[in-house]
Length: 73
Image (cartoon, rainbow, N blue to C red; front, side, top):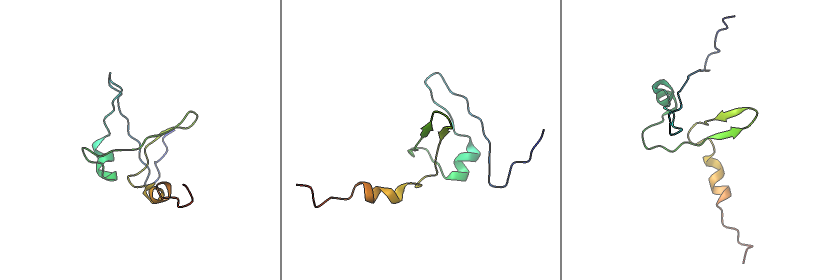
């Protein structure tokens, strides 16, 4: 069965090297603005697999996580 991929959805493959490294396909790097030297976040779920969220997807949480708590002494 040959289903069409919905607009905005993509499928790529990557090979894992001997050191556990993968190369993110160029089309994916271009689409998501991933450049050499960037740090990416990998999320893992044993049942659902690995996800690489877009850069900045959680940046709104950083100020909350690192806010100083005036009640601590």
